[in-house]
Amino acid sequence: MRAISSSPTEPGAAILGAGARPRPGLRWASARYDRVKWPYSPRVLDIAWTAFALGNLAAIFLFPGWETIPFHIIWASLTLVYGFRAWALGPTMWVLSAVLVTTAIGIGVDVWIGSEPAAELTEDPLLAAMFLAMAWHARRKLAAERSHRLISEQNARLLATQRQFLQDAAHQLRTPITIALGHAELLAGDLTGQQAGQDIQVVIGELNRLRRISERLLVIAAAADPDFLHAELVAVDRLTIELVRRWRPAADRRWQLGRLDKVTVRADRERLSLALDALLENAVRHTACGDVIQLSVIKGWPGRHARIVVADGGSGIAPDQLHLIFDRFRTGDDGERRGTGLGLPLVRAVARAHGGDVTVRSVPGEAASSS
Image (cartoon, rainbow, N blue to C red; front, top):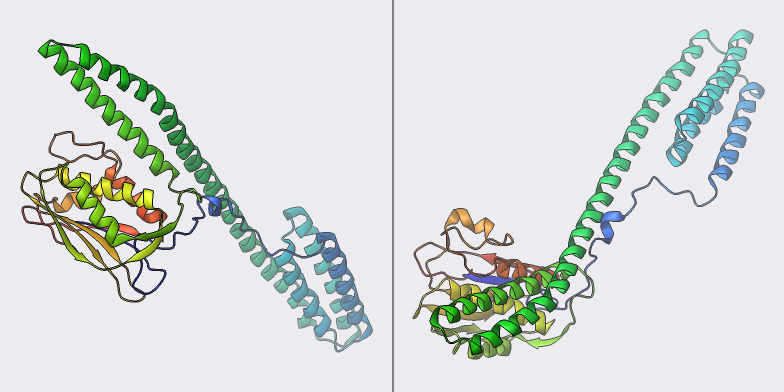
């Protein structure tokens, strides 16, 4: 069984992420996670805090007996402004030294005139040590965020480069493959020898396979682009009936229609048909003449998924292979080369572009059933 499921956009009407919405692609990967932004010039904040600190320093000298209040305000404001500014190491040490010396002088004067006990002098180095610990931790956090941001941006660039390469390669391969295929088909009509005819048919088959690979690579690579989908209203039940009618003469299987709930969604009809064709091609490839292939459309409950289900009566998939079948170019572990190995990855790319997903359940040796 191979099932495509999605999140609905309206109760009971959804398939493959109905209401296809643009995806953010890779733009999120380059987002900046900087510290809190100050709405004015950083120099304005520095000047404002300096004036504020000087005012509180003056209060230490002007109001003996109350000096602990402006004293603690200076240190608290220093910590607060550092959260906005996070000065470099050199300026931070200069500011810390200035605050430490000036506040120590203010407290020292009060201790000398007898308005405060000598024990008050221990607060200054204690607060300085606490500020240093906080600044060290903040700088470590900023360095880690910067490193994480650089890695994310590098990964985003690599993914974008890889996707662009796949698109370019698929585009560049399409024309020469088409030309070579056309010439090979012309040669096939002129050749009369049995061996030569068989050889040219092998060439034609491989060229067709190469063309399918390039076309599917192009779709998979483009699936993350915001403009990948061109949504329209699609009656999924009628689309499923059309698919069965189209595939019935192409493969000698027992084609059946299962449960067909009426589901109309906004989706890209062409991409959706392409994904379902790939799903049915995979079902045909892993079944024999006379095996059952059944298509169903199941409407989900409000807020739940709706599904297109393709169930077949083939030999099934080994449990240890289920998590691998969506890998690119994987064509089975039986030693036989089947298809392009890009059909199911294409199905997943189209499903996720619509906001849905594709899942598989199978029991080897038994007819598959939908979930």
